[in-house]
Amino acid sequence: MGKITKGLVLITGTTSGVGLNTLKPLLSFGWEVIAVNRSNKRAVEIAQDSLTDSEIKNIHFIEVDLSDLDDVRDGCSEILKKFEKPINSIICNAAVYKPRLRKPERSPQGFENSMAVNHFGHFLLINLLLDNILSSEKEIVLNGRTTKFKPRITVLGTVTANYSELGGRIPIPAPADLGNLSGFKNGFLSPISMANGKKFKPGKAYKDSKLCNMVTVQELSKKYSKERIIVNSLYPGCVADTKLFRDTPWLFRFLFPIFQKFITKGYVTQRLAGERVAQVSTLKEYAKPAVHWSWGNRQKLGRKAFSQKLSKRIIDSKISRQTYELTRKLVGLS
Ligand SMILES: NC(=O)c1ccc[n+]([C@@H]2O[C@H](COP(=O)([O-])OP(=O)(O)OC[C@H]3O[C@@H](n4cnc5c(N)ncnc54)[C@H](OP(=O)(O)O)[C@@H]3O)[C@@H](O)[C@H]2O)c1
Image (cartoon, rainbow, N blue to C red; front, side, top):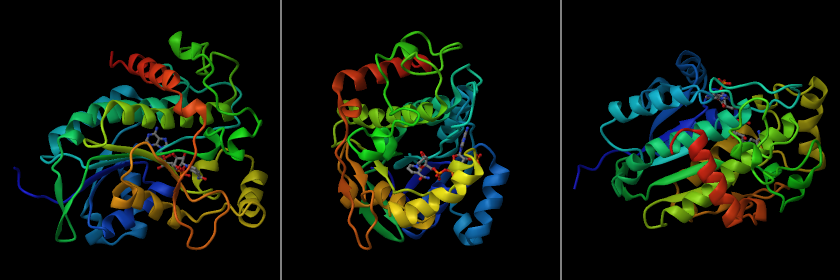
């Protein structure tokens, strides 16, 4: 048995919003953190604004642009070389949402960019680090105490990707739906921009990419037993004032948080969302496979997390297997 070392958690996208606010609770639980961002310089500067020097000493910054699969490969090689001990927990948090695009932006490999960043980049990262995380020690040290920890992967899902919830049925521009996956089957390169092969709808492209994130969780949970690894997703609540909404009209940015705070009551602060992500990705009570954790769409003080019912579009075995296998091909894993 190897020597017992400090727990190591990797998180993507810590320059703002939920990811940035997940750092402090992770560090306070005693974790060593790998923060994966597309600019180390910016990630360090931003972390310095909210964390102390001694906290920052426990963060390793690794530069990866998730839109570029070659960069993901290089970043994972760097991680595997640099760290002697395996990663215990991975948090897939980074995302882009560009609902006003008239035509799709393309990743370096030519894929529609929100699918490339949100799904393909994370899918490849998970798969390249999977053997490493599966080999992680079953005992780690957190804040000086030895504790048992099962490898874990946590993915940020969302209500708008889940047709079982009201928010997942909003028809503007259309609910998340991968259809018959003909866009993926036909290579997902220009002029194709949607997983279902149909006309480009930028808001739906985001929802579809999050649906793929949630499908990946279900498929990984089927492939790997809960004795080996726990894979789950969460919806931290509506964090209506993060930079995720930077490309929406200014009036939307002004009204959306007000609407979520006072009308739907779904609003969650960035700090609370970060605490929820840190808890789901590290605490024992959330170590249940294939669960999509949620605190509901109307926030109430002291509310406990529960397992949110998922739509057939996420849990259907045939769709999840097909989505997983087609994604493997598209990112060059098979
Ligand atoms: N906000 C909500 O209401 C809400 C609700 C449900 C789920 N979520 C999910 O929560 C997660 C975080 O969202 P957020 O609201 O915190 O958004 P955010 O503030 O916009 O943060 C997104 C993070 O992703 C990073 N990122 C974007 N493109 C990247 C790329 N190509 N390579 C590497 N990193 C990249 C950003 O870095 P840069 O600074 O470099 O752009 C940033 O650090 C997302 O998965 C989102 O889908 C959010």
